[in-house]
Length: 341
Image 1 (tube, helix red, strand yellow):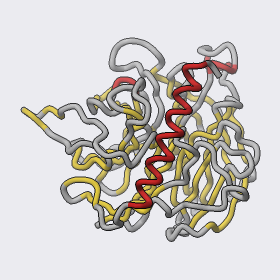
Image 2 (image 1 turned 30 degrees about the vertical axis):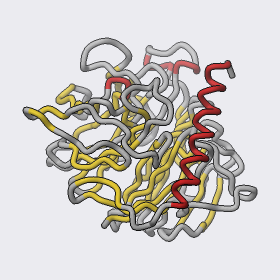
Image 3 (image 1 turned 180 degrees about the horizontal axis):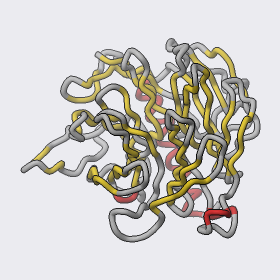
Image 4 (image 1 turned 90 degrees about the vertical axis):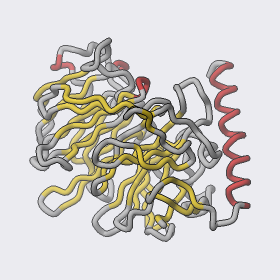
């Protein structure tokens, strides 16, 4: 680790400890957010015995149909931690994902599976809910756009109803790669470059079915936006989020949720918050961020307003519309819960 990265890491860890001390001391009656999307924070929700169940970067979380909250961390003593909604640990597994980053859950004919990306091993995995690996996707040399594994750093997966899946290579060459259910490459789009059809830090991806015809929402984190593509990769829309370096888009009901890693750009350490958009792509609430303001129909730059996060990396929305926020490079903190009020 070079000196600059060491200083950034140390600064973030120190900031996290100070924030945690302050959060535990705060009145639990404090409400965060705006408009009708407001929440009470529980910073102690995910706390465990660190000696037995350590975490490193808490990257992403999903809820299964049993109501369990599943966390992916790149700590190989327990890559997966499984909670109930009250924060009780129900189980753990996984020792093989040193770069565990993206976590997606998919229901296939009544059976749920997990999809995991690993940015250290340059692979994507489909697993059973208890961790048996069923499918592994390696460097897609057949695409003709890669020559070596270090170019392929997959960060997220979205799974279609027919079993096809889309991999966002958000730390690599910035392509979205389309596979069939057996793992055969069908196509790709995006890639690094100038112009709206290209991507820069394509960190997340989700299939959006809120409008009838499904589309792909892809993160363009360094450009502070989400981009909507047709299922065959044609650009349809750019959703600008000035000041917000967003992580993956998460859809629940009519709303879109996202962790904002940093603001206003990736150089600002410890400046994260979370954001919520309605079905018309209007920001309606920021947790830990400034109140969303529109002038002449244009969203004004957003920023961190309250020190409740360091680097939020993902938002999970449960069946009661409560939120769980996982954080990267934030002093190895467990996830926080935000109860809807």
